[in-house]
Each structure stands twice: as C-alpha cells, then as structure tokens.
Image (tube, rainbow, N blue to C red):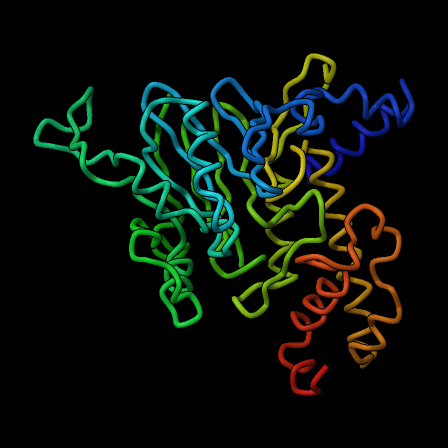
Length: 349
C-alpha cells in the first residue's frame, strides 16, 4: 500500500514540475530505459544493456537475459530461446571471461530455458572440496548448476518437454512450501530466488539482487506485450495479479531526488528496463482487463461475446498485437479460460 501512494505522488510531482513529457525524459535511469539500439552493443542479434555496476541485460532476438558478473564468476538468469546459444555465450564472454557459476530459470517456458544445456556445460560449478569454497578450492570439472522451481523440472521432463536433454534440466530445485526460496551470495551481492503464485505458469520465480537493487521478473512482466498466461502449464490471471502486487510492494522509486537516479530497476521478459511507476502501471493495466472480463464471465457471456466487447480497449496500442507469438486475442482467451476453468474448451471455442 505504501508504494501505491508513493508512485501516485511521484507522478503528480513530475507532472506538476515538468509535464508528462518531461517526466518521461527525466526518469532517473535514462540510459537503462533507452532503446537497445542506442544503449547496447549489437552483435549477432544481441544487445548488451548496462543495468548496474555488475549486472547487464542481454537482449537476444527479443528475449531478455540478466547477467551478474564479478570476481566470483557469472550468474545468468534465464538462457534465452532455443537456437540462440552461440549469441548468448558470445555476449556473456564479452561481459566477463570468468566461468558461468549458476543458471537460474524464472520459468519452464522455451524462451527462458532454451539454452540451459549450452550455458550449463560452458560453465564451472562451485563444488566444494575438503577445503571448502574459498579461493580456488573447488572442483573445476562440473557444469554450472541450474536453479528453478521443482515444477520447471517436472514440466521439462514430462512427455510435452521430451525434447530437452538431461543437461538442460534444473539440478537444484526448490518449492515454496518446503524451502520458501533459494538464497546465495556471489560477487558481493545477496541473490534471492523467490517463488511467486502460479502466474505465467506454475513454476515462476523472480530473482532479486539486493545490493544492486535489480529484480528479474521473467514472464510476470513483459514491456512489449500483455502478459503470457500459460493456462495449460498452471498459469492464472489471478496469480499474475498477485505476483504483480508483490512486485509493486518490493520495487522502490527513486524519490525524492529522482534526478539523481536510483530506485529499483526491473528486467522484464522482453522490452526495455522498467522502474517502479511502470510496474504499478503494468499491474493496473492487467487488473483492469481482468476485471472487465470477469464482469462478463459473471454475466455468463461466452468467449466470443467477451472478444467482441474489446476488453483490452485503451491498452492495445501499447501492449496489443494482431499476430505474432502472443496476440491480443490469445491474451483475452487465456484470461477467460483462467477465470472459467475448462469451460471454453468444453464448448469448443
């Protein structure tokens, strides 16, 4: 609740002082929020966008990957879509020559885990010897461990995910009920791998770099599209909103001295970096669309009638698409199915 009021105050102050256009221009992290073509280094279809002193965002053919680096090695959050391993590994090597120590999956979607095997095998895991972890006292012949929620491993090893090799599977798993979250400290930062309610899928995690004040949201936030709700893999529109509400409570605005920079930066699944107010706006957008569709569902409207009502009106120009891998119609259908269970499928719509 605190951040909701703070974000509203921030918007009001910026608009009053400089107007809406100036508020956008004076956002504290202008280089990070700029288009990748100007902020990054283009090579092999990959942009490297600096986020903080030791975190970069790779934009690989439209998919975002977070890379933390330092004297302890590299941590990669997500591995990108299948077929992009050469570009991803080349970009990571430009960032740091040190080994990949961990790969963290924010979900089991193909565009999050598509290059797990290649990144893991290219890395060196921190496996302790009898002398512990310090200095160079670890074995050098193990691949980098892959961390994810247990449901990610379940989905990848099922019949539907039979195309994945054993090297691509998560090797360190956790569940919200059993362990709560996975924590570690590397490169001078505390890293939290935090489960969220079934949102995009039933295996979602967000990754928090506490010292850097950077959060990786995975598919919970997509700055280019409406969120992907994968109902077939346990995704839920209500879980999506719950996950966004949690993000809203965590992200911190760069106030009161916004012109000095600062505040939490969020690396979404796709698109540019986001700041606290943009996370609030994204949450509000998703909530409004859900409420519009829910009202129609409660009135016993069919999926065809819901589509005809244009429940995403007002947001299509920013997040909508008539074609591509995730269209507006697919989003509306997923929200409807999430709210009604299998009703739409039973009716053949």
